[in-house]
Length: 379
Image (cartoon, rainbow, N blue to C red; front, side, top):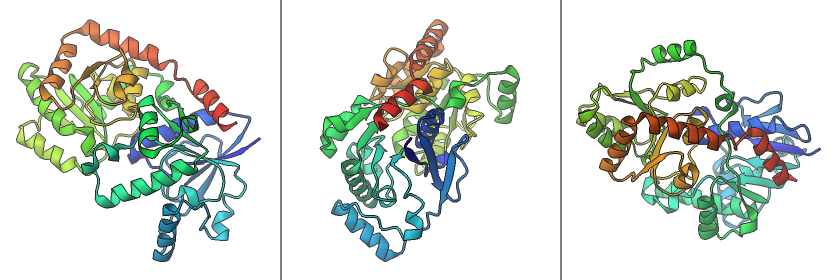
């Protein structure tokens, strides 16, 4: 029996990485052949850990000298732990770590094997979305971790090709392994009473399209709002519901909503408790996913699991993920976005057909199958 540490240093507002981490734990909690220990920040209590052991780690910021030493270590690709003995003892009994995200802290726990999940290399496509400091940190950290990891998990062939192209990692080190949505979405028992409760709680309109995404620039809220303005000319009672944490681009989106006189048509719900989120999908006409960059979109898989139709960008890995189970559009073209949404709104049989196709597609991504693939990887 191996002791495997899960580095769950993530909170709910992290969006897709949080959901990915939760889905990973959902699967590993079913495994009785290994012992799993979840490492979380001392201030975190977000992750559903089932009956797995949890170790809380104090992630206080190191002093300037230690930060400089860590930076040198990263640049020189040196794997030596800089943790004090008392902190290092927290990790000494672990045989293997799995890190669901790229973080600076990973390589300093102990000099132990680790598996890294690399979600995307967005900075190579949209450097303008990052500050110079952010780009440097991402480059140095990703370079170090990808070279030192025993295996790298990614969720699409598109990202695998990026890892080979930009990071020069050999093919056999990279494993394409998509995660299903978290178990509370896959196994949800829908009730009409709860649907009504959620609708009243968030004051949801009868007719809306739904986009759950943190307000980062690459999430393309601005183009979506502009396309929605076009839609309102023909569909007077249609609303747009946006949920997600208020990140860098939030104020720009709000300004665009005001500029286009859409304040009464666009609902900004902020962060939504995950227990309520499935009902926001189910009460909508469709999921709209206009993102400019996705290695894989967890909301698309969530919509599939709930038989909710998907209308999404035709960029990068999304066509691979969606296949024929959704309608695709050019995310840079507001007219195309509006046209594709409109064509779905006016075709109930297509809406139902896409919902069924998505559901049939996601059934292959059970947590049992996911666990089997993870176990093979660990072994």
